[in-house]
Image (cartoon, rainbow, N blue to C red):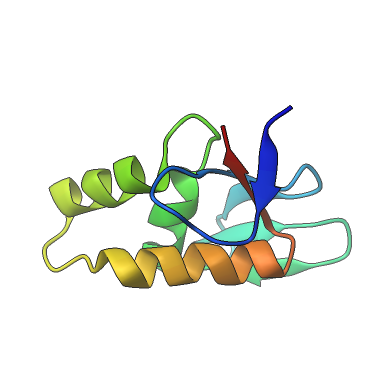
Length: 96
């Protein structure tokens, strides 16, 4: 069985927690992270990162994809963002 971690290593495969979903809210004109009793409004960068967290890509692949889309992507900032979300149980980081 794969292990889960709260550290966003390059080999981890992040995915949203089962109780959350990423959606676009047309009223707010923003992406949101929706939970059973919460809504978190995301900035465009956060939405781009979470949109890539499907459990198939590694953190390194997510960073590479973001670098292909945007200039100045700091891999350490992406890893820190993912680790913070994992600590809040918004993400699972699977080390296969």
